[in-house]
View (cartoon, helix red, strand yellow):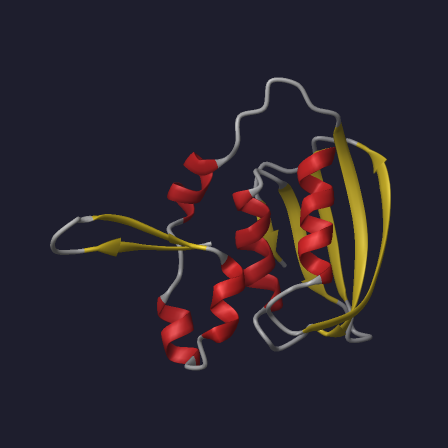
Length: 139
């Protein structure tokens, strides 16, 4: 989600779904449309009860050098998830997610149809929640 300020008549916050960013062809404009991480954290969904899980995934395809990791981080934070994403030497990307099962699986589905790069395949396993992370980071 891209967050910005609307100035003028109807001043307020602008929320744009991440899938819209694939239509922005200017890399400099896309980089300017970054989100305030504090705002993202405040948007985390409050869930009374959920099954906490850890999901470990490998993503294959054209996913390095295309902005995949920062975009994935923004999406993970919007779901209230923690963990990390990092490039691997073989050209794939490793993703470790912790949080509510429903949100973690929604992120896996988002990865499958990522608006950034091109995902050919994703392998993942659901494990027991560890509570290892406090944020979602790009490594």
